[in-house]
Length: 317
Length: 305
Image (tube, rainbow over all chains, first blue to last red; front, side, top):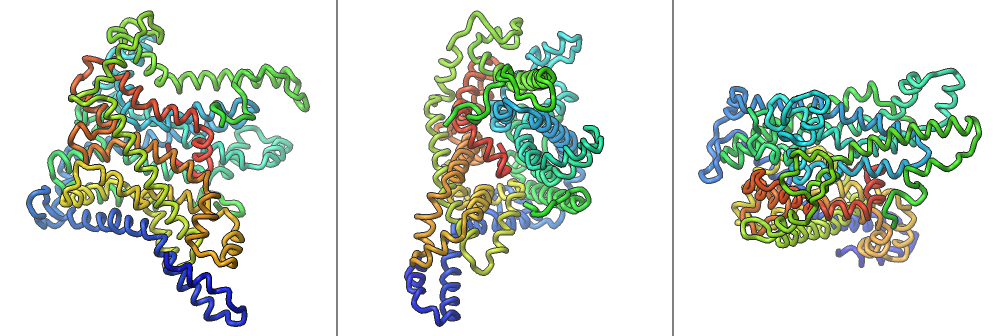
């Protein structure tokens, strides 16, 4: 906040540009760091610092009460003999691999449906978006658990069609579909983004294609998909990263235990249990770093392969 | 401010109006539009069903939730569940939980607005050495899984004796730790004409003046979407309070709900669902009032729900 006097004097004479410029850029540097201070402080104290210390902790045995004891790579090697850990990896990978593409496919399909409408688009867009706003809340987790419980509305609805699965919540082979439905239900956020992308596609492209006798399938693969690919890329990246981090719903639906039979033991839930109920903070830190590395690799893969399928026209956003 | 959609877009049943017939016949267009609305309305029913079921159940007696009464309607609708839910849990009234949630959410909004706008101004409008490196790091934190930092953060706050206070939950908001909002504001400011600052600079204004009297007033839309989203995110946050708060008197609603679930364990389904409704109520009201800002914010900034 000290830069204003220097700046107010700067309009003196136009004949000496060099010193004036350096004076201004010096003041700018000071002002820049002053304005950036909150973020910079937060970045150092709440992000970089903790990241470095969790990397260190991941090589130790630490229970919050005794000083950390260096054990090298032990946490990382024991992980792969830990059945619960392997189970949590399986649960999370299944959720990401099935849930994310389904959610994005639903989002794209509905966005295309809405884009074809002349009227009422705004209403539907808002209605479909609503679940994204509340989907990760504890309230919805409670509702989901009740709806998919024994003789809940889902069970009863299916029995009406002669399908007697019983409650999904207590059935280890049905909990994953239940969580996938929960994420697909929140298709609204990527849908809104897809819809914005679809509106950017010039209508004359489709008209020209119609003239050439292209059907809806060819139009989709030759116009819609390439034109929309930057948006697909964005949604895929964000949704994948988010899917790895599912926590509250898993915690509430399984009472913080990951049951039945470990079928809802998501990675972050196991990490939480290791760190904050078993107080194995070194082990939990190693899990956190492994997650960071895996998410980093997946991000890199999405970025790398994007050169092959993401098409940027003119000015990339 | 309208409460439903945008003013130009009307309710779904507006297809009864006659369209301007150009290339297709009126009937063909009507049939097409009819099919569209039939599909879209069916989808709306499916998507909104869980919310409708939740609200209907919150008024039903326990025996009718997931019992023989499969319809949403009941002849025994009452406010009993809400009365039970308002009593609270563990000797703490639900009103107290509401107040706690509100304190946290308002703190989050104030902190985020202050810190993110100032930091975004530095990124968007001031040239200084290291800016692009820091900007890259800020973007990288957008993709960073939050879990990498929670354990050391907890250890630090534990050593400082700040566990079971609101400080660990709020300090990040005052230090622009939600990179998404910084990014949103940077994008917004970059779209404002640079001539504004240049003119102000020639008139002798410093960065503080430019920021407070030119940028802030023009940034109103970005500040509004930031406020709405940081409020809702804080209101729904579960992991943060779960890690840091131990005394029920300090619990916000999501944590109180968990306590409620733990202690009643399906013996009082109705009250549990009524409390879930109460906990979501502010979010639903926010959505109805600000939905245009919210949906536009998502569509232009890629904000998540």
